[in-house]
Length: 240
Image (cartoon, rainbow, N blue to C red):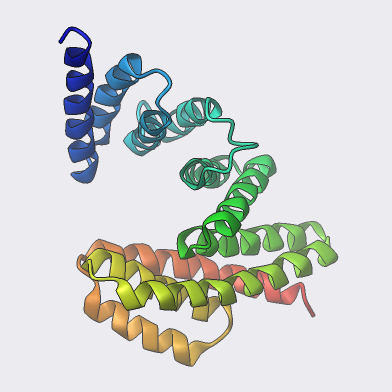
């Protein structure tokens, strides 16, 4: 009983923390997960959840939260791990650090993590993030005058998107949750845009507008696609 009690407390705190994250109360979830980690110091799942809650909390500010999450994930050996969840989190943290700092090392780290996660998990989430960031890096190469590297990233991004479409078609056939279904459709919309197929993109856009469970989802997608459209202009100009 003495051993079971702390473990039961840890489970209860973890359940409360997960509920907090589901309702976007990331600061409180972070505090609870820090307590759980003290009880389960070698639990990789708890470290992953704490890293997620940490960077989502944006406390005390966005960049500090990202750096703190990055340090937590280092415990899981992200440079050598084959755990898709760790790789997805490592990619997400570095993608946001790139947006914050424009430090090229962050961009390369994000691409490396999403690439490994994509080929391990063969999923559309890692794939669409990988393709997007390849277009980001293509634009960076183009701006620096490195045409060959810009073309290489542009071409690989297109190849990844073709694979993403295959995974999305499979996921869409079994998706029943409205939010999950929306994100698959939004990914197909983004993939079509990225491949320069406006007719297919328009078709997926119409469906996304119909099935979106919440307005913020469409706003998020449109913001991403606005960025992608500009990146494609920059990337394409490097290929001519």
